Structures are given as C-alpha cells and as structure tokens.
Amino acid sequence: MKNILIVSGHPDLNNSFANKNILEELNSLLPEAEFAYLDKLYPDFRIDIETEQKRLLRADIIVFQFPLFWYSAPSLLHRWIEQTFVHGFSHGRTGDKLKGKKLILSFTSGAPEEMYCYGGLQNYPIEDFLPPYKQLANLCGLQWEGYIYSGGLSYANRHDEKILRQMKDKAINHAYSLVEKIKNLENP
Image (cartoon, rainbow, N blue to C red; front, side, top):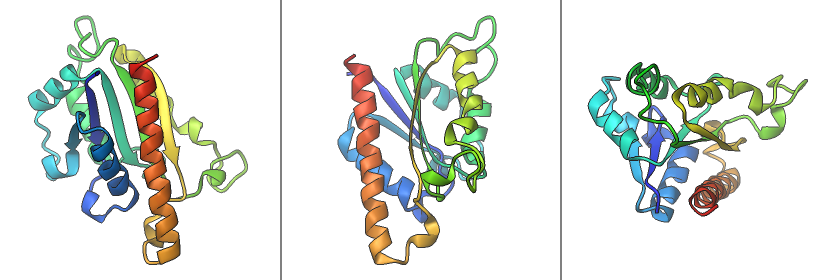
C-alpha cells in the first residue's frame, strides 16, 4: 500500500457541505491515509513548515482536496503550498524531495459542471483553470495524475432537503471516484 496524503484546503470545514462529506467518506474508505486538515491545524495561517514537509516526504500520493474559490484553491491551501514547496526542498538545484511522487487534485464548485465551457456562464472549461497546478507538478518533479471534479455542490442549496440529498450522493460518489483513481495508481 502506498502512503497517501490528503490535504484538506477548505478554510472552514465545519461550515462546508460537499468537502466535509467527501473527506468523511474518504476517511472511512482510506483509513490508512494521512489527512491534514489545514483549517484546524492553521486557522492563523502560520504553517509549521517542518511538519508539513515531513508529511510530504512520507507520501507517495498527494491529494489536494478543496472547493474552487474564485477559480482557484482557497488562500489557506495556497499559503500552505507557498510555505512548504520552497526552493531547495521541492525545486531548484537541490530541491528534489518530491520527485516521482504523484499529485491529484480533488475539488468541487458551487456552479454546475455544464457552466464550465466556452461560451457558458463561467466562460471556460474547468481544465483551463488547472495550468498552475500542472506547472507546480512539473517544476517539482511530481507526476501529474489529473483530477476528480464535481460541480453543482453549492453551499447556498443546503436548506433544500431534496437538493441536499442529491448533493450528498454526489459528494460520496466524488469520494468513490477519487479512491478508484488512487487504487489504479497503486495497482497499475
């Protein structure tokens, strides 16, 4: 079994619906995985760099789990990346510590998937928002393994019981899709 690190980048998981459900399901499906809940560990954004780099060193597969905020990961996850993926560790002449590890994005959006297309409300397909993460993988020698994405998981719909049930099912299916992707990487 490969070592799996799941980094939760939601800034307030207690007030999340989709990401909270996804992570709860992942926790039961992947009990051997290491989970780093950034909102609980670093509510003040003061990242313990040594601890987080050790997490990365132990991992074979790294998953960034987050909601899409303004077409990117939340600032807490960005801060974590800025602090832990530093020259000499993750990149640069001596920065080869992440080389060969696998990176997967697992993210959600409030807007439905069909809105992410050329000419749609979001004006671009979801893939067009991912080049910074692909380049992060490239720069750090990580193997880009793609993403699992689910849209239509809006926080605003949490008061409609029927939609809430549909969203919970979608979040759980998201978790199962991610586990399948991880298992395929472990047993090619």
